[in-house]
Figure 1 (cartoon, rainbow, N blue to C red):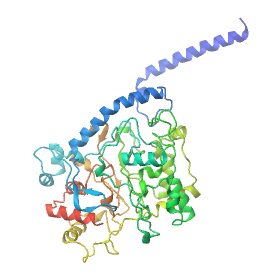
Figure 2 (cartoon, helix red, strand yellow):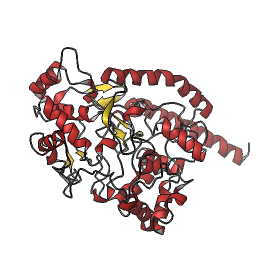
Figure 3 (cartoon, rainbow, N blue to C red):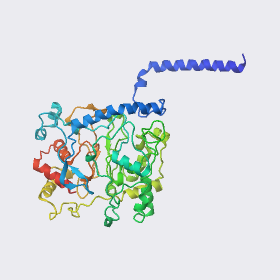
Figure 4 (spheres, rainbow, N blue to C red):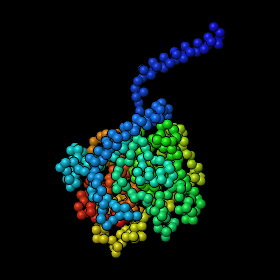
Length: 469
């Protein structure tokens, strides 16, 4: 045998010995292989066709489970309010949609202490954190109206083969939403009734924006790779995808109700479902992200592209094609456009953000008194924009014992940023995870959480006031 072949033989034997040793080490510490990881798997060994077939087959049962949960939690009927709509005319859903345990009423709950509600296990099901339609999987998920329009305009398909959107369309913001600019309030809605995309942004905004803002808008409607929509084998679209745009969630600088899971929490069952917030009023906000507390819209824009698009995992981002924005120009341009997004007109408000006594109804004016008085809403939501730009912890875990709900561990939410209430009637559902479907639900939730003991009339008036903001 030659020296070369002998060397190869000895090397191979050494390799087998090493494998045996490593195998013994791994078997000696089996708990290490079971430990949850902060990282998503990079190497995918199952063929894409097999993944798609398996997850498509499971879709029906997964969506049935989620819709059963929603039906247990809420009255999902289409029951529009009379005489009040969103800015472009879509009906607003009215009434308390949260379902209560048998024999319980909101009045009884209001008289109970958090400890009593927890002990008797009567915390309303719809007040618990809302899970993603498939919480263990997660990912961006869009309403069908948005999917259809993007497919029509761009031939880009945002359909997921494994999941559908869960919340009924009549509980979502109107689409396309109107666009109001702080720089040109004289123009009113500048969207011309169209969903702004890469196909039409230039014709709609050339001559209204300056060149920097126009370039920022172009980037906001440009598709970039994202965790579920990309060109790798572990995507969730049938075909390789160009990706998603910022305005796929923040449609027309507002929101279409699209959902995702926040990227900054592990393990998976503790990640919050995300109800996409509106970009209206970005210019007066000082905190970004429901819990991240990023200090500028530039920070948030850069963070979204680098990590949030990929579940907060920079390793996966590199694999799937992360778009690294240039901070000094691209991020600046995108932020400059976002800061132009204005609130819809509120003709009953004066320059201080209060109801003008000459314009408001008796109910709205009474509701304003409750808002700034007994209900303590203004502690976190002061006029004129109805946010204090801070974070608050409601400590809802006082009211229930932790439990797993469709893959979501319902426990402490922690501090959440104060969202703006200007134009709030245009932005259902409510709370950071969309767990409350109507403003009436929101009033009942906070009446219980804050133990306010509001009367039925005070609750009604409070809703009327918020609809006028």
